[in-house]
Image 1 (cartoon, rainbow, N blue to C red):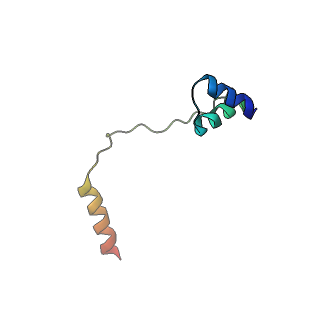
Image 2: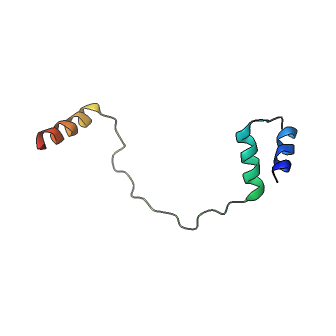
Image 3: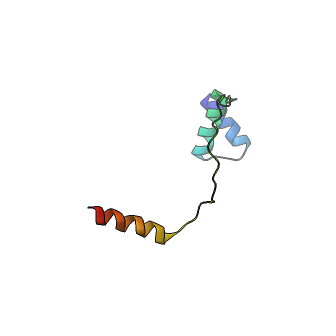
Length: 66
């Protein structure tokens, strides 16, 4: 199997070790079955917002509680 992966790597002009590992994985498990369960996460009402002020307020609230 390793020899086959190496031959495929040479044919693809890819001699990187990670590429060979990837080819070995593809030979071992050519098809990955998708997960049967899908999760329904709650939808966001407000979009995420990056706010350093909110983070600093949380940190200062924690320090005040100590």
